[in-house]
Every structure is written in C-alpha cells, then in structure tokens.
Length: 188
Image 1 (tube, rainbow, N blue to C red):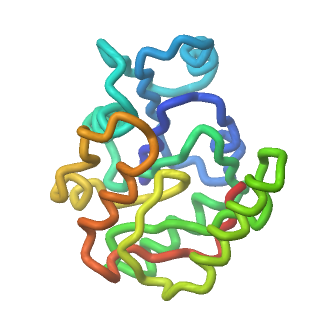
Image 2: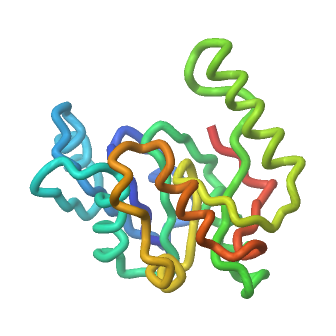
C-alpha cells in the first residue's frame, strides 16, 4: 500500500470510509486499560502490543518499523477525516516529489463541545491557513511522511512519555520547506 496508517488508540473509524483503499492500518496498543483492543480487533488491521506502557512516541516508532509502505500517515484517535483526504495527500506527494511530508488543516470548529475546544480549533486552523505552505512543522493529528525520512531523523523522541510535544519536536528536526500544508484537506 501507499500508506501505512498508524494510530495508538482505535476509536476512529473514519479512515475506513475513505474512497482511497491503498493502505494498511497498524494499531499499537500501548497497554490500554479500556476496550480499545477489543474495538481494534473488529477492524481489518495489524495490531501490535507494547510489553509495558511506554507512551505514544515509542508506540508510534514501533508502528513505523512494522509498516510495509513508503509513506507513513499518522492520525490521532480523536481526528475525523473526509472521504477524499487520503487521495488528496497522495496527489500532493505525486505532484511535489521534493517534499518529505504533508500536514493538513484542522476545521474551524472542534468535534468536542465547548468554547475552549472551538477556540483552539479556530486558532490552529488560522495559524496553518495563513502560513507559508512549506514549513518544518509536523503533527500526528493528521500528518504523512516518507518512511525513509522519518527513519533518517531517528523517529519520535521516546523521552517524551505523553502525547504533547513529541510530534512538534520531531518537526523541529525537519529541514524548513520539506513539509507541505495541503490546505485543501480539512480534518475534524
């Protein structure tokens, strides 16, 4: 497949509604204590488990090592994608061979209820929308990167144990201009 789709908590099924089907789904269960593993087993995916809770950076690095494809797509469990998102990201890689990765725009409203969530969504949308489309920012909310470049940079820093900064820090190691913001792809 063109994509290996990796996420840590399997609560998101919008990826399976995609009109693009050339991908594999990899789930790394990081010692979940809820029903995530049971939910994951109800989908067509490859599931791997960590021996002890090690955090999302390590879990995602494990998923990348297990991936068969040349492009890795990270999607946070609380992010919903549109049916044509994967196709648009694929087309971006085909048209712009020099880039290493693609990120997308969050919608101006959040799926979560509340003013703080909506404010954060609007702020993030505006920040990326008004930016130069070439950057060094990366996010696992929905971000795709060439596997060989991810590995060349050493993957996510596993010293970060919570899901707050490992993707931002990873982006800081990417040369400026190698990540493209596809502003035609909106996520929730």
